Image (cartoon, rainbow, N blue to C red; front, side, top):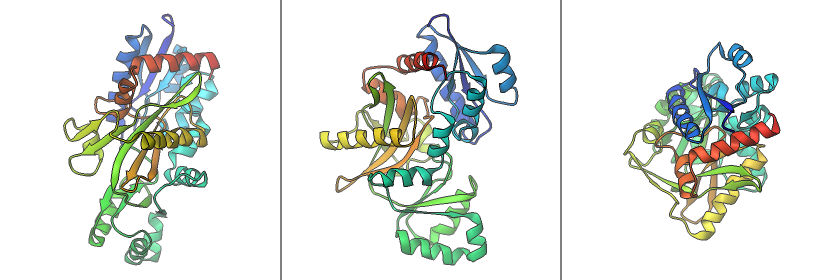
Length: 316
């Protein structure tokens, strides 16, 4: 592997550009420590030409949001026949859409909070207040609003009072035309990383997330000191097994590949609720994936070097 060249694709033009660049830089350093030749490529209009002219042995998609997770960049890599670490374009399209992912997970008998999905046009055409009233009647309070696509909790807000809903909806629609409103589950929030190895997808130790504000939003995710993490999570063995089963199940159900991260919450009665899955998880200094790898006795570089090797061997 020492003579292999790896292109780490990061940046892009989504709202999560800065986080992606941080992930890409950290991953590049980790892979170089494993002896690989690594180039960091900002993903822009020159990408396709550069891939053709400088053709790497493999690429790692470290893009967050937009084209990096909706299958677009993956389709380009597939068309050019360049091996890459991460989920195929088809799997990306399933997981990128949060309501579709929740529906597939629910159909497989996993638990996920009740939800409704509404486009911006519904509020204009049917009257915003009437729709909001019906939403509260269905889901109750508190509830959580999030864009139906996207990551890093951008636009995500917890609403505890009906009077807060109109402002919260405006904030959510700033990041997308469709909102996913979900019943808020009070409990222990965990992130569970799944990595594919020779024996198939395996769940790493869950990481427990305790934000000072009580809400794991964008600021809490990427500002050091605003969130406490417990790795491994403070769970009973039975609950730890259940969250691992959920994460591996979601990985398989959605057709994900190589690595994913499932976000879940353990309710006070012990029920594990699926929230969403991330197919290109953050790798920054405050991200949970590197924490889970360390808790498992491995490292970011070692895991991704193995995934690069697997991608080259399968040839796509």
